Length: 199
Ligand SMILES: Cc1cn([C@H]2C[C@H](O)[C@@H](COP(=O)(O)OP(=O)(O)OP(=O)(O)O)O2)c(=O)[nH]c1=O
Image 1: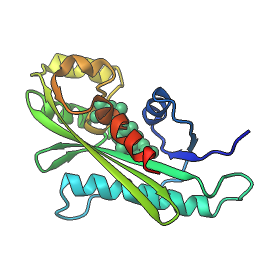
Image 2: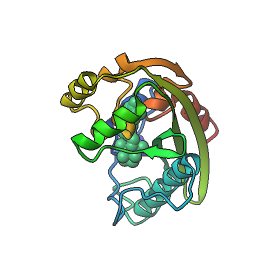
Image 3: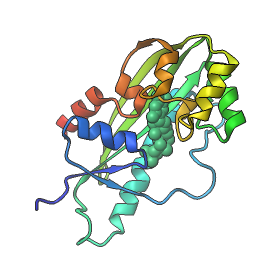
């Protein structure tokens, strides 16, 4: 069997499915979470700076982690792919909902408005980094309280930035998308394949 040449350092099942969609051979690795708050935002950091820094931090962590693994369990010269997806309403970042009331608040904020979804992708090999960025504009229809409650009851908002998944039931809320569908879902396939081509 040929050794793995690409690791996907991500807990997101969507990213794995998307890479499979374009037939990119890879192995998913589970990097232990950083201690403390999950992906904290720095003071005055814009959503764009935040998403890029977070994707880079994930890559740095993954490279460090791979370097301390047993050489016979991992191919230490393989590349590592990481990504971060951030939903931004103006200067506000709408992260993953903490609970149902948080999901309700986030979805009420998105209702009837247009927001941006940024996904930053980083490919790392040792000290080298290759980066890509995808930004999409998503316009939500006006949502009723019943729409929001019914959507939360599906449990789909949890574990997703902005408390929705374009690939699921929330598709019915999306009036217009300008940009990359796969970017909103967590891994922009056009940009990612260009990045991998340059490796
Ligand atoms: C907006 C949107 C986000 N998402 C998901 C993609 C990401 O999994 C998640 C954003 O969180 P991320 O922090 O980007 O990723 P993650 O924590 O799930 O995984 P990892 O850091 O280990 O790679 O939101 C969708 O699945 N559909 C959508 O429409």
